[in-house]
Length: 139
Image (cartoon, rainbow, N blue to C red; front, top):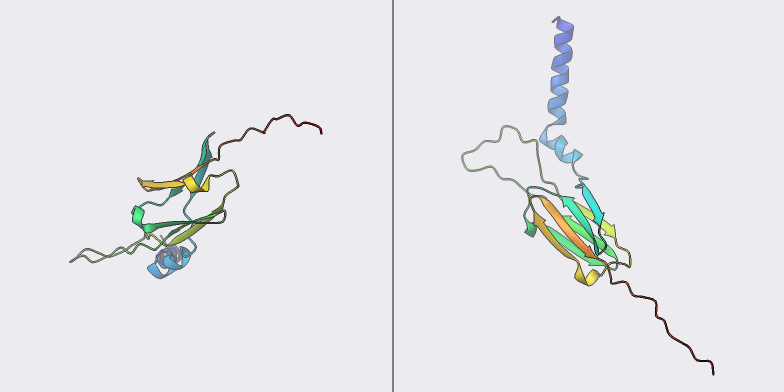
């Protein structure tokens, strides 16, 4: 390898280190949105939000009018005593996701659970009402 190639690779290595530095990493993840999968059955909708490394107490779900909001604070990971962190390339940043619900949802029966890194929110549909049939007398 000649001197020019060695210089290019050294420059590339420095660039990668800068991109993965904690300050840059924090800046890049400040708008973190965990991925979701939304499915539907005849009875309800399901929102699965991928958020590993948290506990169920770290989630806050709220419903205002027809807007469902899911929030989680940033999870700080403190090193164990007598441990020196050499490099830390992962974080659990805070996030906030909101979903507009339609009028089909029975908002009084929404439930949620957190298992294996997935927050599952169940959104039951309102019972379908058959159109009223009746005879109307003419007077």
